[in-house]
Length: 234
Image (cartoon, rainbow, N blue to C red):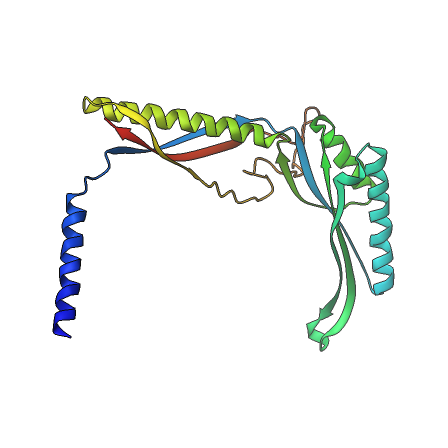
């Protein structure tokens, strides 16, 4: 048993010596980042209908009628079937807690999401939909159709930034860089809230609305990319 322990210690010691003799890789490791600004070319809207009545049936029928009118209005305005979808449907009783949980009335609600691909028509379309029965605008999300193209652009710029940074770091030490040793893309985690990659605007009624000009603003989206690159250091 004692001799077995001596063998293990000897092997570990030999491994440490070999590891110490192995030369460390000569690399320069840099992070390259970039951003591409893009003007959105479409928008996804969530439009809601909410009706209430003492009768659950009447409340539901009223909400259904308004939703049909909204869907018909969308079709009349050239919105394709693939670009509209019912995303929320609810019928809930409302209680009067002062009277021992007695039902006061019922609330029927529906939400319809649709995509408009001509932003110049957005304000007029929203006004038309409100007149058709929509009484709640939940969100507006500006999007870019060819997002992959801009992601590729941002990634290429990030790689160039990494290369330029590595050159500058090596030059400061009177050295040069060689070929890339490894490349890793850092995932972009974008939390959406009424705005795709980044929220830009919402639709709200102004207290003193202007007589002319648009009531919404698409702004710009930021498409970013980050990479980690290791270059041989000569």
